Length: 122
Image (cartoon, rainbow, N blue to C red; front, side):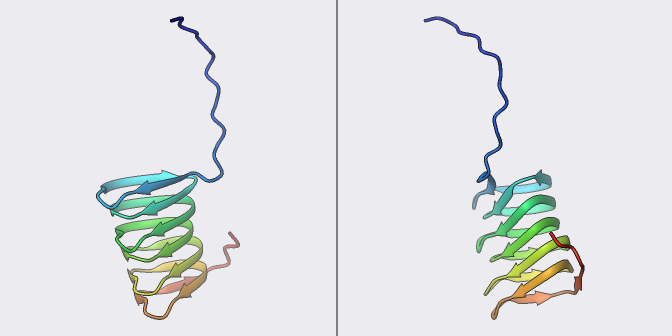
């Protein structure tokens, strides 16, 4: 077997890439991604997502959140800043303040907090 050495080449970014925090995963700290993120487990701290953050039904988040778009199916306690759009889906729970350009609150969603509408065009 020969050992062939090749120069390292940068891997092009995948347009469909996302970070997933699974159901059994617990994270405490700060996280950042330029792509999409999905939280199915527990997250505590600060999170910044360049594209869309989805908190699934089993997801539990206590955090300061900065994301272009946020879709909540689970439970979130914390504040959202500078979002283009926030969607609170049926049966979700959100406690905290939201700063966004667009808000969608579905029937059955629980929301306790305040909303500041901004002119952020995304």
